[in-house]
Image (cartoon, rainbow, N blue to C red; front, side, top):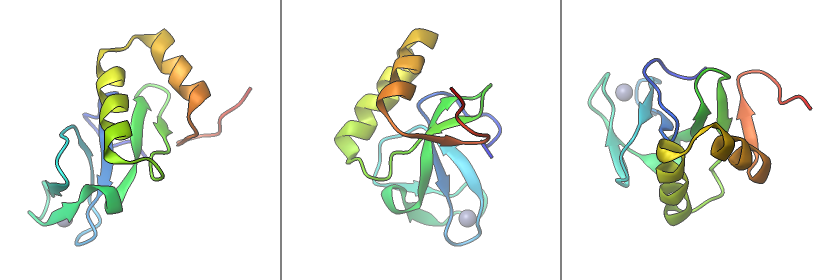
Length: 101
Ligand SMILES: [Zn+2]
C-alpha cells in the first residue's frame, strides 16, 4: 500500500498514465513519474500523506489545500512519534489496515 522508500511527510502520488505509485517529497504542483516520466498534478493524483511507514498509515489529505499539506509534510518530516500520534488524532487517516481504538 505504501510505496517502498516512503518517509513520513511524503505524499503518495499515483501516476494517471501508468498507475505507478511513489512517495513524493517535494512541494511542486506537478511531479514527474519515476516510472514513465509523465508529469502529473500532485493534488489530483495524491493518495494520502505518509504518517507512519511501519504501521502503513496515511493521512487523508485530499480535502486540504497546498498550504496545509506543506505544513503537515514539514511537521511529519521533523516530528517524532508523539507528533505523529497527534496528527493521527487530528486528521482523518486511511491505510493499510484498519484504524483501531
Ligand atoms: Zn507513470
